[in-house]
Amino acid sequence: NIVVTARTAGDQQLPRYAFSPIVNMENDQAEHHSPETSTEFPENKRNGSRGGSVFTDGCSDGPSPSRSAKEEFLMMSPEQKLKHFTCRAQASEDSQQFDACIQDLVRCVALTRLVYGDRHLKLAQAHTRLAKAYLQFKGWGQQALDHLAFPKDFLPFCSSMSSCGDERLEVLTCLLSVHLTQGGASLLTDDLEQAGQGLLKAEQVLEQLHQHDVVNQEEKIKTQLEITGGLYSVYKRQGRPEEALNQCEKSLQLLKECNKPEKTSAVYKDMAAIEQDRGQVDQTIEHLSKAHAIAVSHSPEGLERAQISHCLAMILSSAAEPHHNEAAGHYFEQSLSAYKKSVGLQDPAFLNAQDDFCRFLLANGRQEVKHHHKLNLLQSSCNKYIRIFNIYLFCPKTDKHLNL
View 1 (cartoon, rainbow, N blue to C red):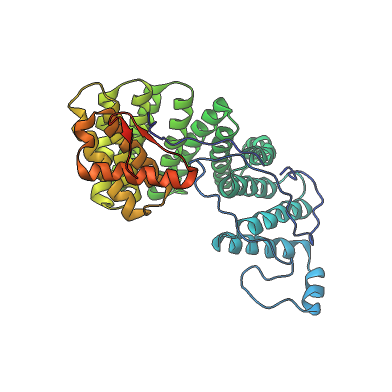
View 2: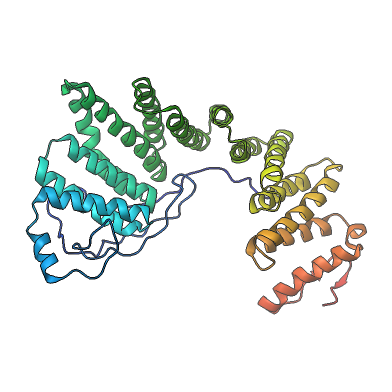
């Protein structure tokens, strides 16, 4: 049986050069750690190119630096070097060179401590940026949590001591990033209680920032969607289906408010996953049908339509009611057509769907198998495996080997 996939967070791990005050500014070899398999929360973990020389101008691509440029860099003050690496880290992020970005953010933490001291808002912000980068770009949860330790300890104290309104809003903005990163990182490390607490605190801080016009409506909705998606994962993994479904309803409402109906298909798939876990076949089919209608409307020949059609076919084929069989066959054929157009005949997704369709046909008797195009489908699928494994496949419903 196919399992409807839902938004979850994988479990991954991260470096621990968080609090060392000394960073070798000329060492561009980042410490490597093997992350575990990740999932949807964080979304982007592409590895960028290796970091270049510390003397390279981070805001532009240019030739190798001259000796005078190196000497000029060495003569820079710590403040100037901090500005240089901050600029270069942003340039690396913009060009999706994520390893280089993280290396420069590590340097920024060390330089910020040198410039501002051990107890300063700027240092909390530097650690928070690095933690967010580890989570977003590498999916390394534990390293992100390591870097959040200082901001979580210091920011509440900093907020209580802030007499200036602007500084307090700056603290709240950093706290929002801390709580969001804590939520995602704790999901990766399977600390669901901490993940839920972080996301709920982020929700409260977000409302305060919105009231003070620090966050506009568009940014608020985007962040709320991140929070509801994270809480969905927390509640689903904690076995709290009603609360998980409630977060999905919130996501649907937010997407309606920002006029992005094409994104609701992912939410309906999440709802289908919850209902499937509860054994509610009719509700599962209902949610998947809604997701399918949206995919057909916005991506008629895309991969998403193929995946949802495949899920629907598997759910319908496993249902007890006989009338679902015809619909299952229709969705199998639809998924194969969409997979063929979106990823090609040799893609594992197409081959898996084809295999599932073959098993469905065989399970439903020789009346189905007698259809010529469906028999060709079976033979085509078997041919691929015979070429790969050099085996003969036996078809029990026809009591003979397929004529390959």
